[in-house]
Every structure is written in structure tokens, then in C-alpha cells.
Amino acid sequence: MSVPIPQPPAIPFLGNVTSIDKDVPLNSYILLAKTYGEIYQLNMMGTPIVSINSYALMNEVSDETRFRKHLNPGLFEMRNALGDALFSALPDEPNWVLAHRLLMPAFGPLAIKDMMDGMRDICDQLVLKWERFGPQAVLDPSADFTRLTFDTIALCSMSYRMNSFYSETPVPFITAMVNVLLESDARSRRTRIGQAMHGDAMYWRDIKLMADIAGQIVAEREANPVDKKDLLNTMLHARDPQSGRQMSADSISKNLITFLVAGHETSSGMLTFTIYYLLRTPEALRKLREEVDAILGGRPASADDLPRMSYLNAVLRESLRLSPPAPRRGVTPLQDTTLGGGKYFVKAGTTIAVMSWMVQRDPAVWGEDAEEFRPERHLNGAFEALPPNAWQPFGFGVRACIGRAFAWQEVCLVIATIIQKFDLTFVDPSYTLQLKQTLTVKPTGLHIHARLRTDAP
Ligand code: MNH
Image (cartoon, rainbow, N blue to C red; front, side, top):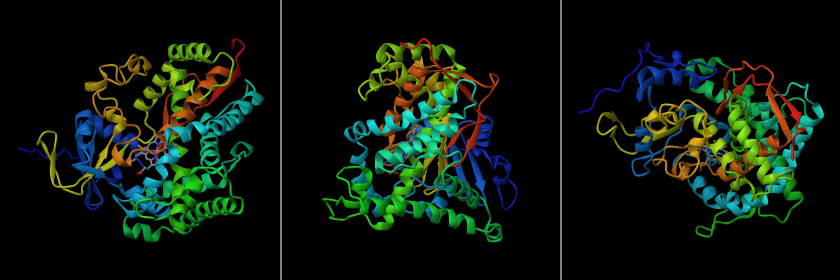
């Protein structure tokens, strides 16, 4: 027998929309999960959204025979900018199938190793900046990591220099992107009349600005061809052996923008969360430094060094467990179904929000200290021995992250290099984690000092 899914009190017409925090929706979802438990349902202006918060339920929906990716309303609005490119495509859209098949190899293990020089180039720019600013400077790691990840994806996948480190304020693409992300989400929460009264000229102008920059990158490559199997050349020239199809100009533009957006926001959040957790946990910072010094000594990290740093890898796994920068994903049942062993009925097509932020703190998997940052829990084969689908910061199945290996190598390199070079401290030792949310979440208000180490090997 199924039981009703718990639902917070709703008001007529708008439903639960007004009870969700406008700036940081995640904070509301965390509170709701603490109040209602493993599952609850919201009514968003007439549309039901089911949120799931336990390992058991996430594991159940991680099954492509019963469930597939579903765009939540905010992501659906992002199609205004990203169309049917990889991230925002509907299930099985033809351009997704083509782009997925052609572009996966551009982010495979061999291709990623070849990107090491580009990654180091940008990482050195960050190190030089922090070194030159000196130990008194108040650094904003989130802003500098955004410069770093944005420049890295553009250089490594398109051989294009954004030069964000030479700009005091965010470069125009970033400003337009943040506006479009926020506005897409806001649009999804407005009524049709509310939207009609709310002008959208700036929204469409920002979308055009992003498309213009994509056009410029393509035009420069076409005027100056290079002999390289990077993402851009693959998009421009690869042909699907099965269908003989090539990507259209529109699909190239939308995917290029997608890679610039998806390729930096999350990795930048991951870097900032990791620095936060390390500063909060001196014991982990000390162990990490010991490992970095033992494996690298004073020399620059190579691509082969990074996987050998087991404590570093455990730190990153733990950072993504507690604070996945993409804190939820959407799925929907292919047919009317039940969840929780027959307990909860869910109609085909219903939006289910998988709250990985909550699930990855489920004591059933992680124990009573689930809320603590403890990299040791992933060491000595423990990570590999986790129950299936317990750790999902990169999503699941055919629609999982295409940039996972890229992000991992980039973040390993940057954290190892920073720890090798600097002593870091909080500017405000009483800082507690505050979140900022667009499509992804990252810490806000975090400031640090970086002093060159005097005890470096
Ligand atoms: Mn990434 C999909 C998280 C780095 C490009 N990414 C996803 C999904 C998650 C995710 C979760 C699945 C979303 C969903 O189910 O709706 N991504 C991350 C995290 C990092 C990350 C936590 C870094 C940390 N992603 C990157 C990088 C790139 C990238 C770097 C580009 C190089 N991600 C993508 C693309 C998709 C995606 C493209 C969509 C894939 C698809 O649907 O086919």
C-alpha cells in the first residue's frame, strides 16, 4: 500500500514557491529535508516536484531502465542560451546523440594528459599573482579560482586565451553568464503575467553576448587553423562514422558556450570548498602537505604524480561528498511507478529532484560522523568498497559529467601546487560557510592570506 508523499503547507495558485529562498534555494531544500525526511513534495505553481534525500531512494532512481534525466524548470529556461547542447538537451535529442558521440573522446584520458601544459600555464598565473600580492593581501579565492578554471577550459579545449588574471573585474562573458543563469532561474519561478511585466531585453542581450564570443572563437580558429585534436577542432571537423553527420554551426556555438559555462563554474566551486575545508581541518592540511612534499619535493607536479597522491584524492572526494557544487539533479520515471519498495506513488513525467547534497550525508552510508570532513574515510580501498551509487557529485548514467577527468586533473594540480608553495590562513578565523548559488553553489565571503612557505623542500 502506498502512502502520500509529505508536503509542506501550500498557498493557492503559487503553491510552495514563496517558501523557497530566492538567493540560495539550496538552503530551503536543506531545511525542508531536515523537517520532512527522505522524501517530500512541493507544488511549484501547480507543478509537483518530488525531492529525495536518502541513499536508498537515490540508489533506486539510479536505474536507466526506470528513470532518465529531466530538466528542472530553471534548467529548461537555460535552453534559451544553451539549446539542445549536451547539458540542457532533452533525452535522446538528435544533436545530443551526435555531440555526445563525437565529443566524448576529446575528454578521454589521453586527451586530458595532453592538456597538462595548458593547465600548468594558468596555474602558474595564479601562483604568481598570490606570490606578488604578498602575505598581507586579502585574497578572494573564489574570484581567482573562477579566473583560473575559465581560462583553463578555454586554453585547453579551444587554445583561446581569456586572460582573466589581467582583469580586475570579471571578463564580459562571465558577467553575462551569471546574469543569464540567475535570470533563467528567476523566469522559471515567475507566473506568465509576472514574466510579461518583467522586461527581458537585458536577458536576451546577455545571451547574444555569449553567442558573439563563441562566434569570435570559431572565426579565429577558422582564420588560423591549428593541427590539434582539441575540442574545437573536433566540433568543427569530426564526422560521425555511423551517420556521416557533422555538427551544425548552431550546435557548435551552443556546445562551445556550454563547455565554457559547465567547464568552469563547478570546478571553481570545488576548489573554493576544498580550501575552506582544509583551513577548517588543520590535521588534514598537515597530512596533505606531508604527502605533497614527499611525492613532489620542490619540483612541479606531472600528470603521473597526481593519481599517486592518495591523500589528495581522498581530500577531493570528501570535499565533493559534503559540498557537491551541482547539489541536485533531475530525473523522471519513464512509467507510473513507486519509490521506496512500493511506498510512494510517482506518476510518469513527474520531476524528481535528487538532492545529492543531502544524500551524500546519509548516516546509513557514512555513519554518525557523516557531517564531518574526514578524508580518511575514503582511504585504503574504502572508496572503491562504497555501496553502489553512494557518491555521485558528477551525476549518473549516460548524462553524467563529460568533464570529470578534466576537472579532476585540474583541481589536483592546483591544490597540490598551492599547498606546495603557500601557507594559507583565514582572514577571519571565525568564518563559517555561506553559500552563493547560480546554477551551482560555491562559498561566498571567504577571504584568505597566502604566504610563501619558508619550510618548502
Ligand atoms: Mn560537469 C554534466 C558535475 C566539471 C561538462 N556535470 C554534469 C552533471 C553533473 C556535473 C552533476 C550531470 C547533471 C545532470 O544530471 O543534470 N561537472 C560537475 C562537477 C564538476 C564538473 C562537480 C567539477 C568539479 N563538467 C565539468 C567540466 C566540464 C563539464 C570541467 C567540461 C569540460 N558536465 C559537463 C557537460 C555535462 C555535464 C557537458 C552534460 C553531459 C550530458 O548531459 O551529456
